[in-house]
Image (cartoon, rainbow over the protein chains, first blue to last red):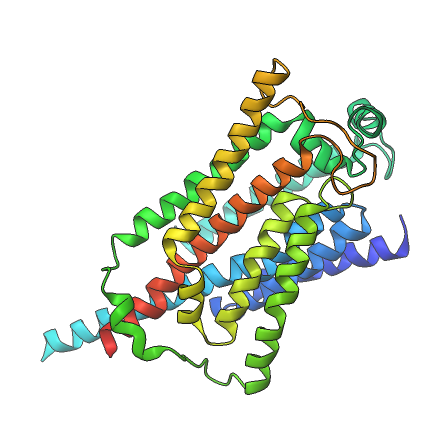
Length: 90
Length: 253
C-alpha cells in the first residue's frame, strides 16, 4: 500500500466521521459533498478512475442538489404548520 | 426505547459486530493479492476480441451489456417515477406565474460566482461530450459522461438563471431525451439479435484500436446511455427544483 493510498483511506475515515457528527442537516449536506470528493480521491488512487468520475458528479452535485431542495421543502411545510397552529390559538 | 435500554443493546451488539468484523478481516487475502480469474480473462480478451482499451466500458457495454440494459431501465423508471409523483403537486400554470422571478438571486451570491458558473457551462458540456465519446478508449463512458453533461446546465442554476435553464431544457425535451436514450440502447441490442443472432451481441466492424470509432457497438451504446443519463438526471433535478423555486415563487408573486 502506498503512502498516497493510506492518506486517502484516512481522509475518507475522517470525512465519514465528520458527516455523522455534524448535527445540522444543511451543514451536513456540504460536509457530505466534501466527503464525496475524498471518496473520489480514494477511488482514483486505488486505480478505479471510472468510478471516481461518476462519484465526483453524483456526490459533488447530484445528491446535494436533491437534499437541499428537499430540506427547503420540509422547512417550508414546517413554517406553514406553525402558522396554522398560531392561527388556531387565536 | 429509553436511553438505558439502547445503551444495553449497544453493549451487546457493538462487541458482537466487532468480533464478527475481526474474524472476517482475519480471513481476508493480503492487500493487492488478486485471485480473480474473471478479471484477468476480461483484461486479456477484450482488447484483442473487441479492440477496446478501457476494460470497464468493454465490460459494461459488451460482455455484460444485458446488465447495463437493466440498470438503464432502473434509472429510467426512477426518473419517471419522481416526475410522476412531483408533477401532481404542481399546477401547469405556475411556470407562467413565476416568470417574475427570472433572476432569482441566492443570498450572498456575488457577481463573480454568477459569472464563473456561466463560464463553467460550456466547459462541463465539452468535458461530458468527451467522456461519453471516448468511453471505449479512456476511463469514462456513457454514465460518467452523462452525469457531467447534466451538470453543465445545472451550472446555469448556480448563476441564478433557473428560468433560462427551463427554457433551453423544457420538461418535454428532457423526457424525450431520456426516452430516446433508453430506446436506442434497447434497439442497438435488437440489432445484435438480427445481425449476429444474439441480443446485444456486437454486430458492427471493430475498427482500428485506439481510434474514436472502434470497438464495434460500444461507442453507440455509450452515446445512448449518455443521452439517457443526461435526461434522467436533469429531469429529476428540475422536478425537485420546480417544487422549490416555481411552485412557491408562483404562490408568492
